[in-house]
Image 1 (cartoon, rainbow, N blue to C red):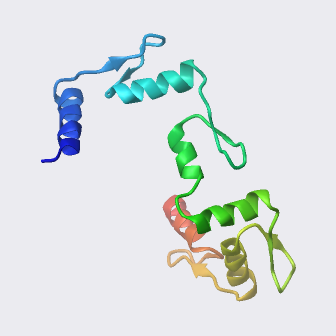
Image 2: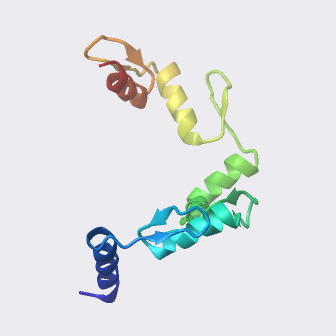
Length: 140
């Protein structure tokens, strides 16, 4: 067993089996891990914020900033083009503009190529598969 695994196992045993918690001195909220307590104090009581070096967007937690900055360069470029450089993708059929190519593709498939997804229960149709799934979840 490596040292990282041992560390997680110890934290698990302490919090779950030994019921060890770490209370916040400001509001008495309890946490299973000291690092969670520290993050809570930084964000809630100290008002710490983390800024994106590229666009200045603010995040309460460093993890949010890390997710936002994208690990691969192509995703970052797409984000920068859409959100900060004003680049759009236009529909050749109707001229409607979209920030992302994937949004345009979805639009063209559902509106202009008439690709729809039909509910097998009530026969209602949807332009996007995710909307059909949501319908089935809510209505049936």
